[in-house]
Length: 270
Image (tube, rainbow, N blue to C red; front, side, top):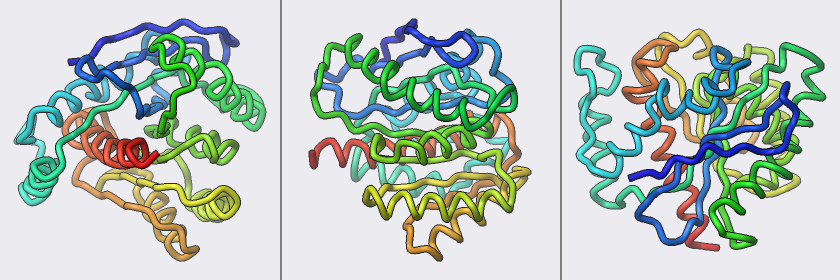
């Protein structure tokens, strides 16, 4: 279902120089690509970092579930995916099947180990000038139109916000999953996102959290403040904690389906 490529690139060892690329086998043309940033627990180890989403966060299994519905609970005892939401997901997939997209999981730097502003700028530059061109070369798609999305979990959500704000024109969709930000930061980020979108144009935004996520309140505030500022966004709250079991059961599934809808719509329109 997916070809897996361990892509080694130029880059600073302390920043990033490697990514795992998950490529749909059934697609002849690659028009949509999603960059996924991992959490704090996998920083400092390239191998853990590039495999975090695919293995620990359940990305490969989420892809399989979406490609072969109906979607069902993986672990019914957890109660993270309720019956009503499962029915909604399956009705949506019946109406519009999951199309599939290239998923790129690079090493995510730790901004707490250095000058955060410089790290964010350097990492955004690496994504734009090294990672994306490297993926294009590896897949043989040259300068063909490509809808690019960005999402991140926990620390990756925090890093993703900064990367997107530095280069909003680079992305066709943006999301965060349980982003590691505080209340004050949420309000500031909402204002910065609104200002960026005012300059570059509309950007679909997805904000996902869970009932026992310690970052739930800031995530809700970010969504609310964006709405107050006239920035549409989809907020998704489900039952569960801030951990990998929640991601594997429902968090990654919701994130992946949302970006698939946004990016493939953009690719078809383009």
